[in-house]
Length: 109
Image 1 (tube, rainbow, N blue to C red):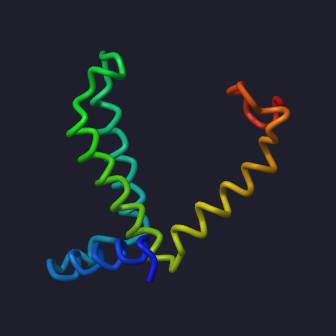
Image 2 (tube, one colour):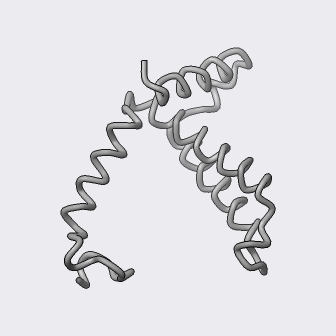
């Protein structure tokens, strides 16, 4: 089993042991990801990037990733594969010769 699958299984067991599966439908998991992402953003509000508390960033990022893994599991998605697929898609949309050193969106290159 790959590391990503191990993480997904550990998260699922944690939720099942607490009977939280009932709350983890795809809609609510997507909402939770957004809420946790906003909590991460709050750590940077009114600060320079170096002023953010690294431990708090770690905790919020773990929450985001945990909910993302649970959402992927709901749809039986292989996290590693969907990330690799997205990199491949972005490689087509953002060829190095056009995208290197610029933050322009693919349709502006």
